[in-house]
Amino acid sequence: MSDSFDVIIIGGGPAGSTCATVLADHGRNVLVIERMNYPRFHIGESLIPETYWVFKRIGMLEKMKRSRFVRKYSVKFANAQGKESAPFYFDERDPRENSQTWQVLRSEFDKMMLENAVEHGAQVWQPAHVIDVLLEPSSSHRLPRVRGVIVERDGEQWPIYAPVVVDATGTSAMLSRRFNIRQPDPGLHKAAVFAHYQGAIRDPGERDEGAILIVAVHNERGWFWFIPLPNDMVSIGVVADIDYLIKGRGKPEQVLEEELGKCPALQPRLAPARRVSPVHVLNDFSYNSKVCAGDGWVLIGDAFTFLDPMYSSGVFLALKSGEAAADAIHAALDAQDCSAARLSAWGDSFYDGVQVIRKMVYAFYSPGFSFGKFIRANPDRKNNVTEVLIGDVFRPEVHELFKPMGQMCTLPESMKLEGSDARPQPRETPCRNSDD
Ligand SMILES: Cc1cc2nc3c(=O)[nH]c(=O)nc-3n(C[C@H](O)[C@H](O)[C@H](O)COP(=O)(O)OP(=O)(O)OC[C@H]3O[C@@H](n4cnc5c(N)ncnc54)[C@H](O)[C@@H]3O)c2cc1C
Image 1 (spheres, rainbow, N blue to C red):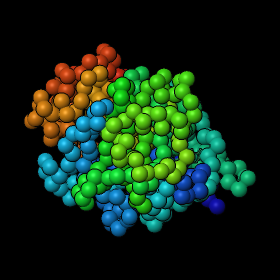
Image 2: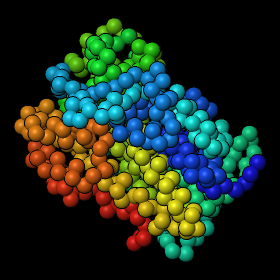
Image 3: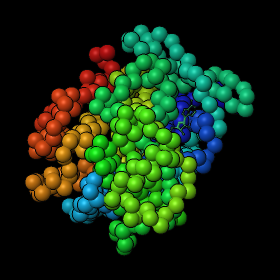
Image 4: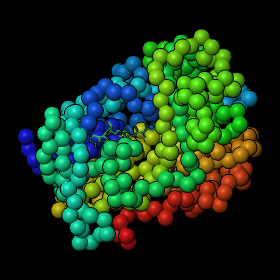
């Protein structure tokens, strides 16, 4: 077995698989190390339309079209009283080839993505566990250079080396925790409780049956998701302040039942359904890292940044960062310069897009704000909201939406939406390392 590669990627989730596929297409000798056997359960089932372009580039599009994943054409919101908004159809503004996306079973989707990386020439070691990274002082940067990793497989441990190591470990965020550069979003101390149900009532008709429904919780301190999945299953989850959802409450099963019992929008939909999975809990999942790369290392997907999952942006951002980082790594290897400055070349524009979604999240949590109300007051802005829901967020002008939206929000100073140049906290976060 070889002990050196052009690139080592830790983690074979959507971010790692995408990065590996693009690098393999560039002709790079790339290794992915994934600790779990697939298929395995993972949350993050609702995709957004802009994933289309990455799927197309990495050869996944036809596989998605042939898959049994549920087709998703729109997003719907409901208030705490159960009043549902009209759907935000992705093709309403401008029907395009990517106006439809999918609701996926991550156990199947992640396996397809990793197998696709192998088809493109990436090597995958699975199950194999990266237990440590090999560091040396950096001559130009306050954070160390990464030279390789220690991998454990079949009870044996050994070092392997590469000029670039990519952290795609998801919320384990191996490198940012190690370097102490991970910072939680101060405005979003949330938890999620979720499970799969079978037999729930969906909206009728091909165009509507796959819609994701986002419902405000009764005290407006959080929201539910209702995501139709294959095999007559739906994913149901509730996200709310940790203090409200977790502290002093009973077992997760009880919390989910209590919350659903107070949700007029979901009660009728779930009346004929039964829970078919354990109830899972995750908390404090919104954070980002101060930098997206250092000398010889790059952070992608959730290992770099993760936002409240309200707009189903996680997999999209994992795909986009995996793709963008792969191109930057390829250019850095060509230039024989794997410095922080080169490896973070993609970070600023990527992070600007993350900020657009962050502002939409902050707006949702603003007391009294609702998208229904916002669109009634600003009908000309419906297309701009849909643009963000699609994932069309990497254009500076998208920030314009937040001028009128900010006027309808009551938010603490650190979460203000303000104008197009506003950068809600935490945005001292530099994505480039040159001034670090
Ligand atoms: C409650 C909740 C709901 C969500 N809902 C949605 C949604 O509807 N839509 C959406 O798009 N996103 C959603 N997300 C976000 C989505 O799950 C993530 O953004 C996405 O999975 C990120 O992909 P990734 O590849 O970065 O990380 P992951 O998918 O987590 O993959 C990381 C991989 O790294 C492996 N790994 C970790 N450490 C090591 C190690 N040391 N050695 C080897 N392998 C390792 C893990 O086994 C894992 O397979 C949700 C998240 C939460 C918390």
